[in-house]
Image 1 (tube, rainbow, N blue to C red):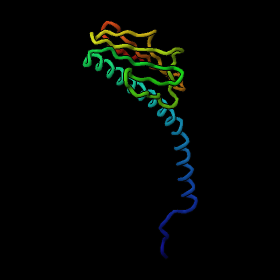
Image 2: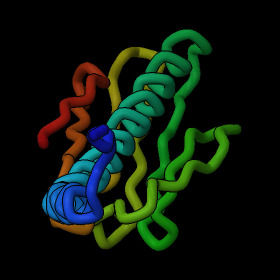
Image 3: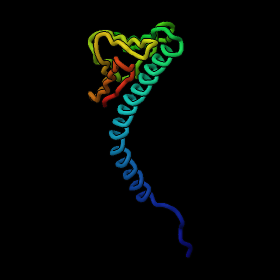
Amino acid sequence: MERNKGWTLTELMIVIVMMGIVIGISIPSFKNYIVKTRLDTAKNEILAVLRTARSNALSEQKNCQVIFETATNTYRISPGGAVKTLPEGIEIANSFDITYEFHQDRTALTTPCNVNIVNVKNDSVTFYLIPATGYIEVQE
């Protein structure tokens, strides 16, 4: 008598149910990961733009601004920079537009304050401009 080599329907159903349970448990964690990653991405992109503006002010010997527009959740380098939009689910938390101005003498000016960005879970990142040096500090 030969023995069948294979899986029974019951065994296959048990495996499928177990896979469903594992997937069901992991989906909320994956969604949280995506939300957190979008905030990190926005932080890194804004930091890169701020550093570029500071570098441009020093190398070109003229003032360079980064303008944050809260109504559209966009930011850009002025003069001449392309408008960048924050990722989906990320917003500028300030209730007014903000301009960071970098000067060729390594100083900076902010009008009127720090920039705060938040995600849908209210995790936030704040960018602080140090006027005396033009450096940016980030607080998460």
